[in-house]
Image (cartoon, rainbow over all chains, first blue to last red; front, top):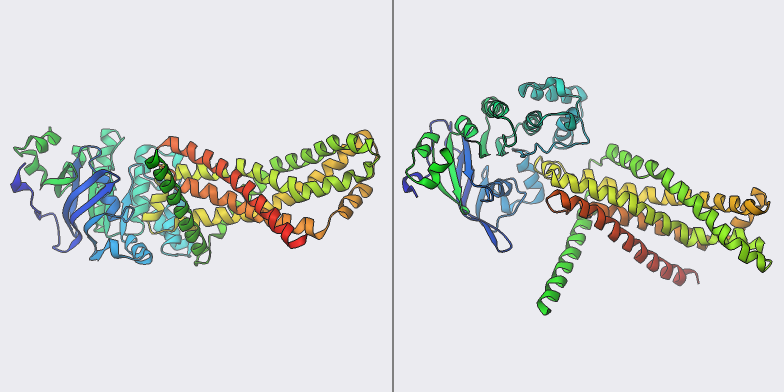
Length: 258
Length: 257
């Protein structure tokens, strides 16, 4: 273990010192299976953190706790200054409006067209009624992911990459402050993976989001990460830039970069 | 042995607790602002209109078969004139509501269980939840209310068609005018036959919608669980229908007899 790397390093790419997510000693178990043993992390405003780790290590569980989909057993979890565990359902709903979550599969509503998928959060969450304004927002966000022509298509008519893009558009339409990406490039060919990774960066600049990205894709990590944390056995064991970790003497960390 | 029994009881009690909480979420969301009228009407169309064929044919054949089965026996006793009354009372009081509810459990509860189960597996429900939309209001309230309203309407339609089937059955061997058959059918019916049977169909509809939604919404991850959700939705809804029917009969007897 490289102790010098197990520190919370602030990289130049992070634009602000404001902490948007603070996690201290977070624990989560499912029955006897202790998935998160002691998670500590700070995400600063404008920063992109990539979480690396082998499958089944609890990477997705961490971001599901952040989004309030799972309740942690112990520890502090503050998002935008509010402790998630202490929030009432209405307060949690309000907080979720500021968090975007891109699921691995895109999680598009398969009975709705792309237009209806994108309009859904606008009409249900923002309670927008003006059809023209909804259409404008839908087209604007579709344009930013390069899929204006897919507006009337059903999710079943879209390729894997297009689904991810529409999923991304649907989360961005509410203009979140924080983005959580669960393996955004899994199952995609290298060219599409690269396009999605570059899109993440482009949209982060456009919408000024702070992001946690879970991925196994080292190209994606290299493109999007301001900082990378490596997870093993329910804990974050190292943190640093791509180059710092790639040159780590610790084989456990180094193996991800080979 | 004892620990297995204890853990079974614990699991059962957890399920009961979950169902109570789910009922609470459903009830709270009915009266919350922003009722999903569009989705509710779409669900009424799916649950009601798309079941008309199956339920109608079933109802008609029940009436036809009942007449064909009972007519020879009643003829032996010279009591053929009781056929319309017997058919109408047995169909409206018991056979119509229960059989149609069981048919709906097979068709509707399984489809809701599978639909919500697959939405759960593909993370669509989670996606609604994290986008701060309200999946219970959109998915659960609309489906349960659609079932609660459409199952009674389907049953009333099926009861009518069953009586028509009865008239057709009588006319296969004899000739009885429609006016006479339906006059005798309705004459045999009393207020206490119709009202309790209609009321219980609302509970059947609620049970079908609730069980379908609960099983789908709480299905585990993985494609296998979609099939399990659909299957257990049908089994549980059918059991609930029989149970509700038994309770409804007792309450009706206490009130009217």
